[in-house]
Length: 105
Image 1 (cartoon, one colour):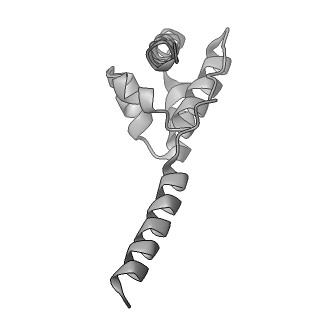
Image 2: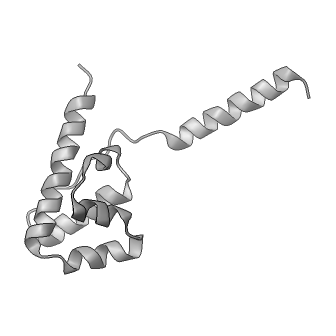
């Protein structure tokens, strides 16, 4: 293979990689008014692996994000309502901070 062909293949593969890794900018975090809705919203945000989740540094947030998928729901169900609401507020705050910082002027 000549050099031009290798460069063409590399560019093609690079573009495919970028397409796979492209972030969804239209993600909207779900609203919640009680513990059950907060759990659904938290699980949805974690499932989408939003970039702003890295800013959530509380123990409960790090634990929830780090757990295997099938254990997250059980973990959140076992938490007291106050902790779930605090986690929801932390995620929602970082979500709005991210939206404010990335919005085009």
